[in-house]
Length: 335
Image (cartoon, rainbow, N blue to C red; front, side, top):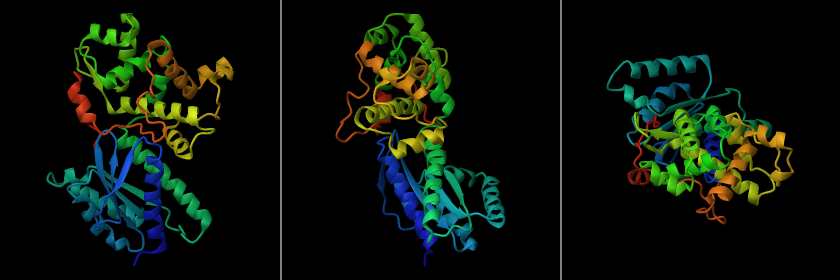
C-alpha cells in the first residue's frame, strides 16, 4: 500500500504537468499504463511518452523500479522520484554503471531522469506540501521541459536573441518565416519578408544559426526550423498573449522563466510608459517591443493564428513542417 508521501508525490507531479500544459506551450494527455505510478504523453513538436515511478518506503525496490522504467520500449522520458540517501545514490550509480558497461543495455538509459527528494518529507504537513510542490515544479521545468522537450533551450539562447540589434522586428519576421516556410531561396525569402537589405538579414541569420535557433546546412544558406527556435517564438507569443489579456503574469510562466534564469519583470500594461533605459535593458520588454514592431513594420502578427479564447502556442506537426521546408530535419534532443 502506498504511503501518503508516495501518493502525494505522484499527484503533485501530475498537477505540475497539468499546470505547465495550461501555459499552452506544451500539451498533455494521460495514458492508461498501470505498470507505472504515473504515465502520460507530452505533446509539442514531437509527442513524447513519459512514465514515472516513485520509490519512497522500500529502498530495496530500487532495482525493480529501475528495470521497469528502463525496459519500457515506448517511453522517451523515464522519471524516477526517489527518497534521497547515500545508500540509495550508491545503489543507483551501481545500477546505471552496470547498464553503461554493456553495449546492448546502454541505450536503455536514454531519457532517464532521477529526481532525488528530501528523505524527511512529511505529507501531512501543509508547509512541506507547499515546498514539495514548488520543488517538483522547478525540477520538471529544468530537467524535463527545458532540457528535453524544449530542445536544451538555455538562458544564453534567450538573451542572445533578445539583445541582438538591427531593425526592430526584423529578427522576429525572419524567425517566423524560417519556422513557417524555411529558407531555401534568398530572393523568395526577401520577397516574403518584404525587406531587401541583405546585410541585416545575414546578421540575423548568423545569430539564429550560432545559437541553434535555426538549423542550417553547413556550407549553404539553407535554414530550417529548430526545436529551440520554435520555443523562442512560442515563449514570446505566450508573453504577448498574457501581456495583452491579463493583469499579471501567470504563476506557471513565472516558474518557467525563473528556471530559465530570466525572471519576469513586474507586470506593466503599457510599454510606452516605461523609461527607455528600462525597456532596452530588460530582455522581456525588449523582446515584446521587437515582437510588436514585427507586426507594425513587416505586417506579421505573431498571434494571428492563435485562438485567443482557447490559445495554443505549440504545434504537433513538426515533421510535416520540415517536409515543406528546405531546411535540415535536425532532431537530436530525445535523450
